[in-house]
Image 1 (cartoon, rainbow, N blue to C red):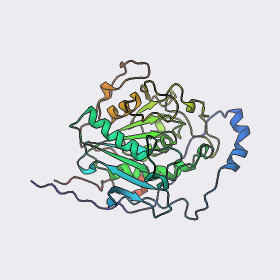
Image 2 (image 1 turned 45 degrees about the vertical axis):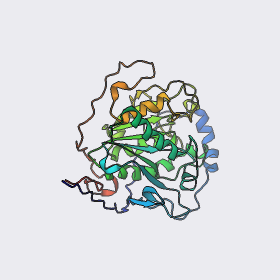
Image 3 (image 1 turned 180 degrees about the horizontal axis):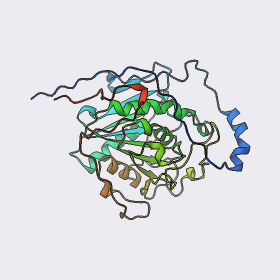
Image 4 (image 1 turned 120 degrees about the vertical axis):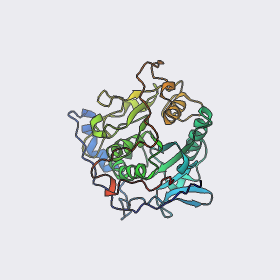
Length: 334
């Protein structure tokens, strides 16, 4: 029997209102003192169209690249697929942090380039399970903070969260969906969770999830987190002060994330190093091989969540992203 794959573009409907974020009870004195000057120093966007129009996810091939979204030249956003989304049993969405944009996405090379990281993630899952059908989405679907100074502002994450949530409802519901965020990308992911259809979240080197408590995420996704012992991000202020600060770490007891092992990597940029324990653990989670995930303390004693059976429909929150229908637009038809 021949299987047909209908592909229909997702209309770029209006994005949902920004989710209210509870304010922390305590602000560090240093951040309170520095906040006014820091806020004034954050570069303002000269683009009169900012915030950008919601992404319209439409499959297309451009110069050999399988794209789901692409801003016009000069725009910041691009979403590329590696592997076959419509046949995948496992889909990984990779959300980067500062400094990634369309202008350097196609030119950048080496281990820090998102395209390289996405290809390495696909290869790593294949090395673990050659029979697994996996697709990886490199998602530069938001205007990233241009530098560390700007990354103290949560507005970039607020602007991107709606488009990330809409992507999760566009992807096939039959697939196990994992979102892997790095650095500021974990903040975007955290803000998207309440409106998203995500099975697992892997937060690598998170400066904060944009939220205060696990209940703010909608509770559906399993949350895993990695932080290398020498990662400077451990010193990032975990607070919110108006538009500054990125909320609590996923390792805070209020989130209850499972802390996974990182092996011998050092610093903030090595989580995707080839063969690293952090990359292997992210790939194991993406494949649903939870019993093989190593923990930060070297043990494997944490209770392992069960992988939901393929095709299990996720409940959609009321008033979900952009008010779109609950059906997925990229589907397998019998």
